[in-house]
Length: 485
Ligand code: GLY
Ligand code: MN
Ligand code: MN
Image (cartoon, rainbow, N blue to C red; front, side, top):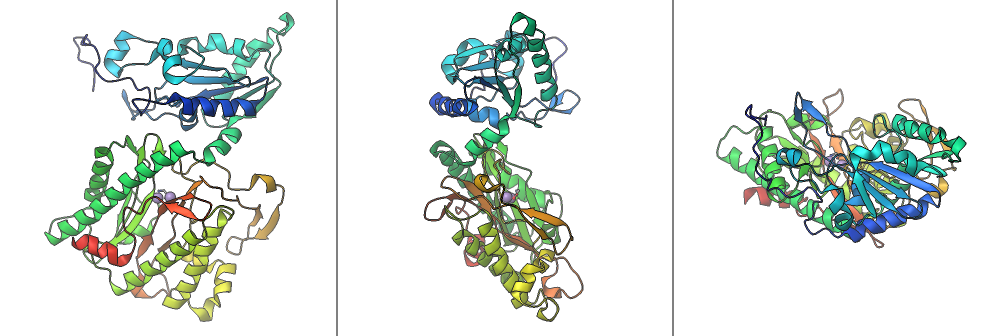
């Protein structure tokens, strides 16, 4: 919306401040996280955490604002123009946008520095306009300054400018921090294991997304039954409606709604292609709720009935997902579900005739030579959390030095292997095997252009994992029944 030429209306804004997604926010969660961070910075350490900048979409029109995940993890605060400073002694200072009647009329209420300590549990709050004034003083006499490396454009230079000001005061007895440390290393580890509060939000996000998938399947069958001109964007619209209707603030990522052969394009976006009876539809879409992502893929027959070849490949992908789920539990490695998936898919490719035994050999050969890669070219999962491809290392920290090398059979490149992360309760990952069959010599025609992925979100538990996205069915018969309903 542009400003009318006669000047702004002077009415009080009615929208509540963007203090948090939760109207009655429990700031103790964030206070505890800041205390855990402080303990890792050590005395003499100081951490600087900016939130995300606003992004222009075109001319004077901004993209919907999305806070920075690290900043939100430590504050629960969703306004732009804010920084958090935490010292190793546990003192936290928020810099935020000052109250401003004129701006608040246009953009919504601001929390403001006066109200921030009570609302967010920080020790002090100041105007973000005074950041450059205070930062050199806060950095003085500190040993190490921590900030997220290579995330915020210009941050390194800005920290450098503040440090230069501290150095200019050395002759007056000021000490300048000697170390710059990457804050991501500490926060990534903290974020990797989701606490009870986070798991609860992620379950709710997953339920909303699952419902949206159910609705899209049913809309698809109904529109085709009624002979309507069904396009991918109709299904996308149905998903987005369901997300928003249930309070999701954003989609967690751009939805993939791919009809027929489009499903073989891994990062296809929902477009205007017609959805036809007899084809499969692949939908990879999930909502973001209160800062947490969900990530679900379902593949279903547009008219509600799998053909023979479609069902054969679907059952294979589902069996490979079941093997991956069975391999997901505390104590297993992150790569175990992927290895379990590949074993089932490789055997299945030989059994259904996607791969020719006479050419590629046994299942062990298919795995060893990565011959399965023609039809399965991505990994079986990733961490999930505030970011859809969430932060957190995939290597076991205690074993980073244990490096082995192998030559990749397809590219010929030498790849360094380090032991994969050991799963712990509270880690959240996706389990998303697939098969993508592009026409090629030797590939049976009945399978051409079939693209299938099945993706669920799993919370690791001691005994196994909790699949939080099963509000949408995954078995072929159950999908068919749902689409008949
Ligand atoms: N939707 C992104 C992914 O599945 O990784
Ligand atoms: Mn995913
Ligand atoms: Mn996905």
